[in-house]
Image (cartoon, rainbow over all chains, first blue to last red; front, side, top):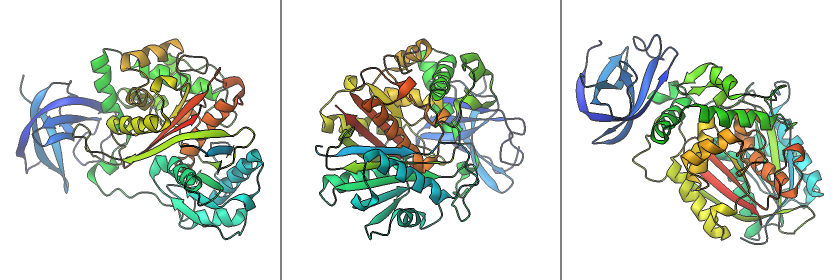
Length: 80
Length: 372
């Protein structure tokens, strides 16, 4: 994974989608990617997903990653 | 609102007009609307033009082609809601007494950009991602809550394609009955939305003549309300997304109150459907049905012309096509045709009151209550 990872906040998935095409970010989602709306202490956010497409209610956290020169917020599910 | 009427409507076919100048689409639509109203351009006191991607000054070019009468010409840009925003300006120009007749004209070329045309640059992070993501996430949530499958969305799409088969001006006209299975089998864009559940980009023009005088075949404007994005912490701002369902509810409530009607009085609906799922979202937000009801209506033919809640009878953005600046005026024109009883094979029986609703990227919503 790229550097510059930092915890941002706990998050719970409201809903998500899987997009079966290449993501417009270097090093992420070559074979498709997921996007989720997650509820956080800062409100509901739209974020990319690290890993499989999560179901509503999935708990995890939002982290910041850097892809190339672009910073992005990603949802990471808590380990099962 | 009293004393304001939609006296004439006109449209070009929606589809590909790569070899036609953008202004020609606006002029053609306006001339058809004026003919339909039985009026000449010299009767028009103000013009409002609508486009999202036109080169600067196109509105003036269209108006000057119609006649150099020296009247005020105002250009409107509000993404997919542009046409309905222009219509609202035209209605209020007449309602306020500024003029007796106003003309709203929408035009767009999306399949082949007009030279000098404007395409929004990808500035924010989400601008580079497909706009359907927003609709897909929302749809997945209500599919989860309503415990129904994506077939409900596919049924809405199939209905729109089959309604467009009855509309000679529609962009996507299938030569055969479109089935739910066919919609489901199309290429996936963002789960659960397949390509056939997403709008058809189109070129086209649409126009409406608004008058203070009641004329033969004119349809009364009972209310037309417009809002921008209200506070809603449940709706993330990400990319060129539309406003939340709560905004549709707010706008519709104001329109129903102004028209002194209830949602149950509406007999025909024309709403913004960037994706088929948005048709379901909007019907729920307008207070016309709940999610389970819409899913049932979609799968039982209840949203078609002869159904209980006829919606997007011209095929909507999915199949009539989405020509941004012209779309809202095409929507209102369809309601006018239905209320006049002039919608031919897609005619809704006994429609007396109709509703047109537009929603634009960035969060501009307009709801008009017509007829009654």
